[in-house]
Image (cartoon, rainbow, N blue to C red; front, side, top):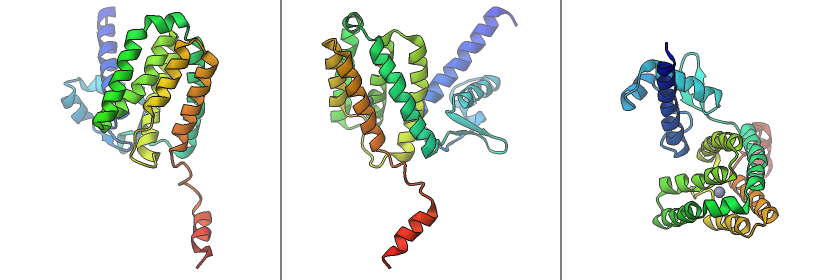
Length: 231
Ligand SMILES: [Zn+2]
């Protein structure tokens, strides 16, 4: 295989990884959905080997689970993993904000303003899929503004896994991020107040985590005793 073939194969595998990640992040593919190779081959007009390689890569990223007899499934993170993802997001998104300079905010001014507009539009149109996409895009955009590629890559993975968590554990069927909380983060950054921006981001992530029902996995004994206590 020459270098050019290797590159085009890598690009094709990456394309499949991107499409599947996007579909999972936007809740088009729910946690636990079977990812049938033949269907992906057909839907994406892709080669079977490339689809297999893409599924392997997504499995390494914990976005897909490969089970010996059932093939590939969209991952179903448990409550403990959900909590760990939020601990990781607090660390990574704090670091991202600490990297954002006033100069970077000026450079990305138009994109940021454009994004805030799309977020408001999606929220007022009440299109759930658009809302999920736009709200998650805000966090990824801050990653790009930070200029730190490594933090951005780690965040991209955490955002897809966060979408799985929201699909599994969100208490109400409401959008997980509040637009005004995003705007507070932006306004602090525009004023060059990174400490306030970090506090706003941490409060925002705490709020997101508090909307999840991660205690539903209480041991049945505890639930049963509680449930029967007053009878
Ligand atoms: Zn948010």
